[in-house]
Length: 400
Image (tube, rainbow, N blue to C red; front, side):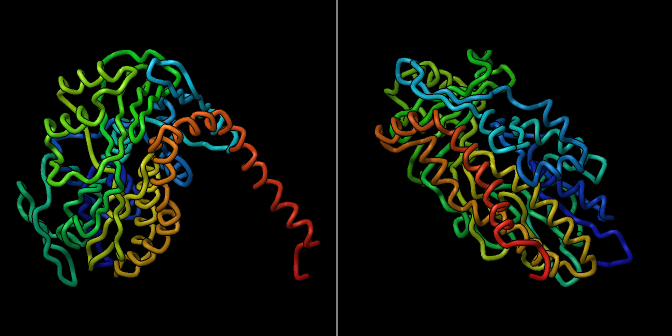
């Protein structure tokens, strides 16, 4: 990069990490271009969370109020049996209050749209195209696109998700880095009003869960199930995805017969493996990764928070380096791994809570769900009191 110029950066992916990175890079004097394979903004539509460090970043971007206006209506999780009778309930809003959380849950579609709107004047957006080849040297990266003419950039950042094309081109095949965690997720819009507009209604059978989520009054179905990796599964093969879901849930109770009929008739069903991305490094020369492309780690909602936080950290470090990206990439990785690494076990924990493998596990979860807000409140209170007592026991602060 030339410190006297405004460095050019190609960002692949217009989901969550890509627009966030474009926003901050532009404010630090870079010239970002975002390329997205889809013809327009796309998403599974699943609810995701903006929490922890992402809240402060969204506030600095001026979008937090918009995110709160787009939030889902759900304030509880209701667990029901085969006949639809409630057998457990957790007040998620009480959980947030008990832990003093400022988080917001909203559809991923809306999160991506709000971030795109905030960043669309920060650089160029190119939809309906993708990167097919990268050739880099000490001064930049020559990029070949599927449709557009080749271009040269100072840096290339892969923010293109679990199945990242940039990661494949710069680091190697997906099979080396993406590790199936024994779970698949499928979602679809039901195009009908939600019967319960304030609660996510969940039914479990051993190893599988179906949930009806009220996304601002409109019902969305989510199927989460334990399953070995399906060899040769196509990421865009909707008929294959339909067969997988209907085979797994055949014979289940509650509303499953009706929901499986909707799956068979669906024009739009999103399905993917719950996987972790494990890499020794997130940068190779002038190419780096951010978001799920670098470090997909979670099952329920954390990915968006990590994508926003990682994009902001990467922009900060690039701005501090300017003339040489290598130390910037190294510092970004060290900083962001402190958020990513502690969440490596989150999939197993979330799966045990939401997709118990046995009937005994389901019954224990249903019983425990009633105690979650109280347990969260007790944990938060301990964190507030214990450090103060520890400080008091040491006597006055200072050189003693």
